[in-house]
Amino acid sequence: MQDSHRRAHHGQAPTDQNGSHAKRTIDGLRLLPWTASDGRLCYLGTNGQGYLSTLADGIEMMQLSMGEELLEYARSVLDPGERVTSGIEYRWLACRLTEALSDALRVADSRGQRIPAPQEQDGES
Image 1 (cartoon, rainbow, N blue to C red):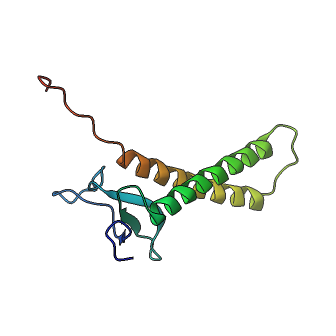
Image 2 (image 1 turned 60 degrees about the vertical axis):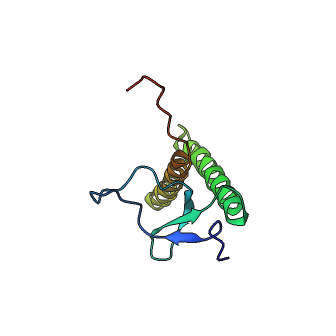
């Protein structure tokens, strides 16, 4: 998979010339819904098609679906009249909700980076 459209890029978020993290990635790079083994962000040089793009789309859908299920469970645990949950169970729930929020934010970031920047209208500044 040496093809540039299927090559995963591992590294920190792109930075601008001042060294601060850029809000948008370079055209054609997609933030993937997973990280490298050392926790660094992974990017894919892609045109939005191909095996890895399809895999990333599927993983994003699964992450969001799991987050929805977890949120539904959390709401049921917090319903008045439900049995009192132990501190260990609340900690487990807080950890899973943190993971789900992290996944959802990465999906939002990835999708936001792929929204084309608005073009300036002629005559507008």
